[in-house]
Image (cartoon, chains in turn blue, orange):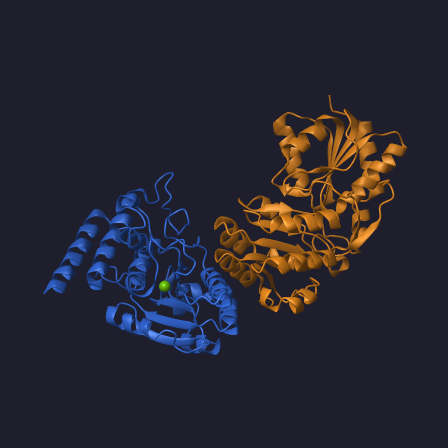
Length: 272
Length: 324
Ligand SMILES: [Mg+2]
């Protein structure tokens, strides 16, 4: 059951961040349901087929939310969960942003505005070679002010990359405040439509809604796909939700315990 | 061939384009990716012949490099081509992260490099590319000196296991090498006869190598012996060649079409100091000032990067001698 996995991932994320005494709590919690559905229901990516060019590809463009990805890749069997104990420790491969030194990670990210261009390149190569695999990427909503996102968007449409699936983690917050206060980017749907994407909106925390929207891919033949996933930063932990300070705040021992209790309760509810 | 009379080769960009056509004919994985640079890169014939092996990105260098990384990740042998000035400044973060750090062996081709755009001014000059790329791990850096080195570097780059940056200008170049010369990325080529001792070691790169060569010829007429290294690879850095040339010489002159800060000369100076080879040294290049207006040769002459200027530098250094 994917809902239960989401709870497990959230626990792993918080454990990692507590252990590392660093990390991007809010953004990892907002994109984890998306990653859950992608890795467990949508994408054809596994440790067994990772060397196969015909599998799907995933680029974590909002690289700072790496804890969510680490949790899922561990559970998918790319490495032992114990390896995550080394996160951000001296000499570890598990740094604070995705790196190809970690099994299962496709591209080194962390600087914003890079993932979409690389994804376009992968999708373009697949098209040219007549492969029908797909390329997925998740971007942050604060990331969208990077001009390179819009350069990449033009080429995604120009080359009719309907095998490209770009997802915005629309939690409406970024490190310094509300995205719309920092730099207004709405109307996003219209902007991406005007750039040539077939755009869909979805509740980024509803597993059934996410499954449904991914099943509709490609949304329109010949057009790249854009999913604006409406999410809540810090989702799942009451005192973290929609709080800008939880962008990279590390929970205290006490906060961690309360968060775990909340997740245990959520798990119990699922069983009912 | 008497090397004091060098024949004039083809425009380097033509040679580049022809080489790519030769290569693409045999290898469908070769892709040329351009940012509206097919005209300035003389790549129109390539595009006509291999429309499926050319990808146009439009004027968007960051996107050019990012997409190239994605293509390379999918097994393509990608030549990302754009003027060096834009490629290594505007798209530097993509080169650093998407190519070098992510280890995507893209061939980044900086055309019309250095001051080959001459009087078009500083927006179009790349006098920073060696400096910035040398500070980035995992990208080799090559500046061929003539048609032969350009062809050889492009050919060697196809299956090069690491990211590589190759930069050159656009005008016809003098042929410096005899047929059958061995070329290897990371191995400097000695252009002059090997001796036990020299008065001067010229270590030059790219399109300044011919100038160093003429300086060497000019000095020999004055009874001053010298060697000339075509140091086409800034990275991998050929320590052995530098060590040999410098330790056999009284003075060292480095020559490059680049800022004197952070380029070949700085690297050689620090290498020699650390290796305990202390020689009077001159870094010939573009100084830290607003670059004078002129064509490439006029700019070279203004900053002492031509035969006359380099001969004068050599004589001054020899006269001054070591500071003992
Ligand atoms: Mg955000």
